[in-house]
Image 1 (tube, rainbow, N blue to C red):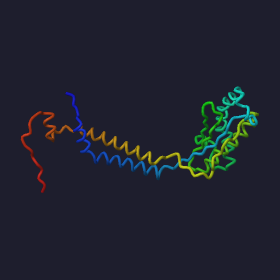
Image 2 (image 1 turned 120 degrees about the vertical axis):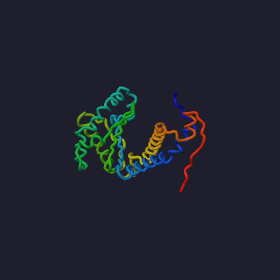
Image 3 (image 1 turned 120 degrees about the horizontal axis):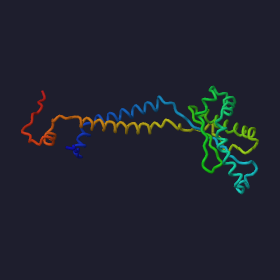
Image 4 (image 1 turned 180 degrees about the vertical axis):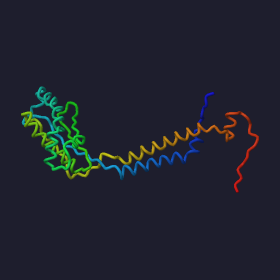
Length: 226
């Protein structure tokens, strides 16, 4: 016969295991807080922007759809150039960074919105001033390299990262981590509580005797405290 747990039993299970559930939630939240605040190094992100557009043609460029389309097609090429070994090496040399150019690769991301000639150069790292300097150096060097390699002067620096700007780290997010960990602790504690209840086959309460055997209770034996 299929066993059905009613609302009253659910509440009783939760009340009986309340310390376990809250204990796991608090423990998980504390661990997440300690790890987020003290063990994980903060990561900062800086952004510079470049725009693909022929210099001196700002007034009439949008009257020429063919030229705009060409600029849009170049964005993918320029994105790869910006995070290329050649440009990363120049950034390391220019800023005298104590890292290899290869280690910069995962720190850099270049994105652009659909049908937009604006490209965003994002650099993420543990030093917020250094990330801003790298983002700006990438924009400047990319502009020069495009002119040298492609033979066209159609990449301009639109905006630079503020080296002295006070910015919050993009990760970790301590509050979010604590909340998520606490919720996971609640879920785990609740799951353990119901599992313990399902595995407990003892007939140690009047309710269980009445439910599973259907016999009346003739008497009770109380615990006498000494």
